[in-house]
Image 1 (cartoon, rainbow, N blue to C red):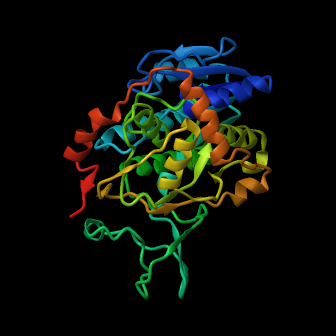
Image 2: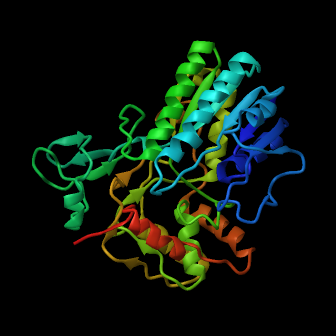
Length: 368
């Protein structure tokens, strides 16, 4: 096959590129090398065997040129993270997907499209009350977070609840980024059905690994924490650090993309990609300190991000039924990430410069 990977210089896209080449496919990359993610320009991991087009999915002509002669499209290009911007998520994430399907319908007989979505389409997640069983509670009110009452409470009895893996059925994006990714799914799946373009959407859990940008202070907990640790600064932790996330290694995510590309039974469906295992932020920091050989004391100030989820792990049983299994544990993945980042030598830290902007725009709020 000849495959186009939009955002193919990024974290997930570049690993999809590697896997496609490994399997003998031809690969074309379309990437605008946006800053600050690609602060130093074209990264050295773009393979010589792949055709590279520096262009923008928001530019119709660039996307049209990149689609020429393509069989598969892996649409990874997107803007993410917790920022104060709203409209740019839809301009950068949703509108290009609509244009992509127009171009395929009118000019390019593409055989399959795989679009990147996110766990950000979920609300607080799925929870378990010891007395009343599983439920999908509403988001935590800001007033509750001001009191540093971090956990979810049962709507019936008020007891604290624990998180459960969430399946694909319960969608309610609380933030602009998640809304834009859900629009991506809706556009892709429904336009795919309408124009008979086989399409799959993948909801990624919190993905980390080598090639995660070291320069973008708004995305990538692994890189943000690592650059702080390597500059002898404590990682800044929101809430109490006991919130859990489903940390999924980037190569496992890339393999999920190739699997659904090859499986016809995946067509016109949406799948979670995640391990189903929740790791607290504090445990993640402890493991990072271990791979760097440092004692790390995180900084907890009682700050929080309105709209953030408390516990979010994903149930990927539908994807597993197709033959996918995560292969890299968090411990193994962080060891491989550390080996990669330490090859850079001196690493700058960009989070501190962005921190005040996050507070000014109320992306980050101080509890009372």
